Amino acid sequence: MKKIENKIMLITYADSMSKDLKELNDILSQHFDGIIGGLHILPFFPSSGDRGFAVINYDIVDPAFGTWDDIDALADKYYMMADFMLNHVSIRSEEFRDYMKNGDASPYKDMFIHWEKFWPNGNPTEEQYNALYRRKATYPYIEFTRDDGKKVHLWNTFFQEQIDIDPYAKATQDYYARNLGILSRHVPLIRFDAFAYASKRPGTSCFFVEPEIWEVLDIGMAPLRQTGTEMLPEIHENYTIQLKMADKGYWVYDFALPMLLLHGLKSGRTNRLIHWLNICPRKQFTTLDTHDGIGVVDVAGLLTEEEIDFVRDDVDDITKEAKQYIKLPSMIKTDGGKFKSYQLGSTYYSALRCNDDAYLIARAVQFFAPGIPQVYYVGLLAGENDIESMKTNPDPRTINRHTFSREELEESIRKPVCQRLYELMRFRNTYDAFNGDIQVGQDDEDGMLTITWTKEDLRTTLRANFKTLTYSITYFDRESGQERTL
Image 1 (cartoon, one colour):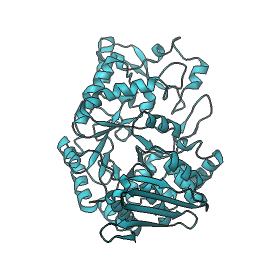
Image 2 (cartoon, rainbow, N blue to C red):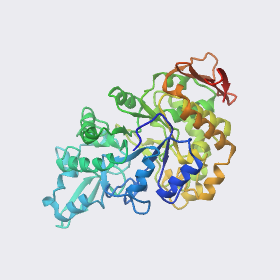
Image 3 (cartoon, rainbow, N blue to C red):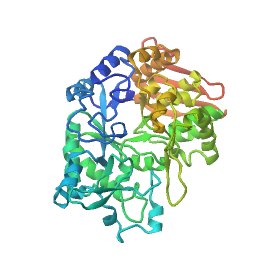
Image 4 (cartoon, rainbow, N blue to C red):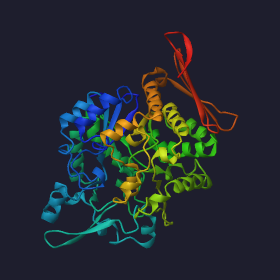
């Protein structure tokens, strides 16, 4: 098992650019040697929904994808990350089925959060209900009928197949310990998916509630500390939460960078981006695209509402054909307000109107930004919006989840934009200055961005013009003793 390295990590499903894990290993070795150093395979366990995120159990790899031996073979080549759902389990899990069968006699009964028991008066007041941070318009619970005939209302944040669990219950903590112990034997980094929803207290938003959230993370980290496994908490919300997480010493995601780059490349201005690059955490993983959408809530305060609308309106225009197929857009509701846009549905390449120059600048900035870059498989192949798949799957995230055939993949990697992208990725993975110190230029000329990395005698500089969509990368070549242009 390889430990975490400062090299680009690929995000992919087990079957999105290959039929299974063995073929994925073959494809990565054949086409992407030196281009990626890390690998985040999205949930590869038996699951009942949400493209793998309604995990039934973590004991085995889904047989459709392979076995733990296949995971271990990949983990010997790439530092790997796996997902763990701290907030919920599948309703097809052994624990939930046992509770449905045995009711109050089940050893797992305390794992699940009973709606009426949670609220001091049996139900929330209007004020308490309006304070909830919600992902759907209905009450966040589902009614189930146990085998003994009793109807119960259990907390449900996301989809029908996922049921929330109580991190303070001993049964839940035993569940954490057993399953995190399994994952720790195979990967050095575990992502806590949707962890912020696991902090619930009456009268609050029940989302990233302090101090409960830190207690929940300590509970989840307890098994990982025994093995030295590291953790990346996944949270799509205002950038200030990432700063709080970073202050505690955790890895964080830079989910603000995607929108800031879109704004810069669409407006020709870099001032907002430069400000963020100077204050953002350094112990972080950067993204432009993921299996979810492009985060909007993450940049509130870094961009004005008018600037956010400017980007959103342009992406909405790009994706207008897809809108007719979306039944449930990505929205949130907070503090009694109206539902608002949570993320934008588009591939990153399409969001830039398939402009190769803009896309390469975006990737170059990501690779020069503080942190370890992650590249989603669709972005790795400069993939465009998958409108055709949305006709049969109205989940708005489908637009950015195209499944590539081997023929499509091999055709994509030959595109000039991809060949140039891979050149940038190889350089980012091998030039040691990226393990040194960063300096972000406070450019006087609007539309310019300069980032320099130095380590001992090594030095590399990115100079990008967001108005002309041109850039250059220079670096000191130790062998020749000269400065060269990539």
